[in-house]
Amino acid sequence: MDAIEALKTRRSVRRYLPDPIPREVIEDIIDCGRLAATAINLQPWEFVVVTDLETRRRIAQTTDHGPFIADAPVCVVVLCKETKYFLEDGSAATQNILVAARAHGLGSCWVAGDKKPYAETICSLVGAPQDYKLVSLIAIGKPAHVDSPNKRPLSEVLHWEKY
Image 1 (cartoon, rainbow, N blue to C red):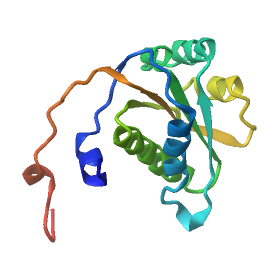
Image 2 (cartoon, rainbow, N blue to C red):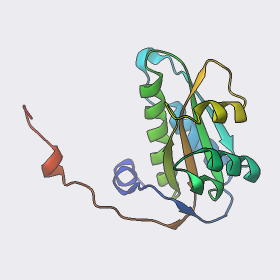
Image 3 (cartoon, one colour):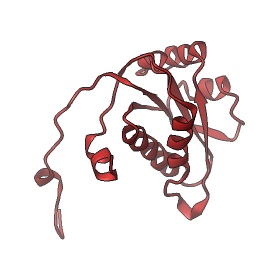
Image 4 (cartoon, rainbow, N blue to C red):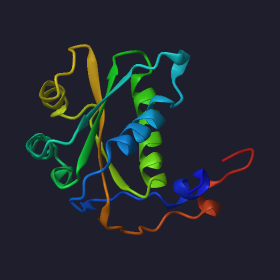
């Protein structure tokens, strides 16, 4: 699948098949996150891949909008060292991971982390150093179902020269 198709067909998936994802596929997806745009090339990110069912259940129970994390065979915890642009950098890495998962024929869903009341709990659960912030949680797996929400048409969001 080429990049444009992956970008245009990526959707948030919240229902997964239990099939495991090969380690080399996960590593390739995370490698795409590692190569994201980053302010001043600081690359403040670290990625914790959680495949253990009990840990995924604990993560899912801790979040407010991520119960499906327990059912996805992979949860990627995106952490960033607290730098001036950690949220932008971590979000760019997260988006790369979402698109890379789609390019591998997998589904994914971004669950917020920054500013969430559960952020410190998740960081502690995965053993993150004190100076790292939770940016996102990403469920990844083979989709059991994919919704096709309506997206606003380009004509509604594109402006030339002025708003």
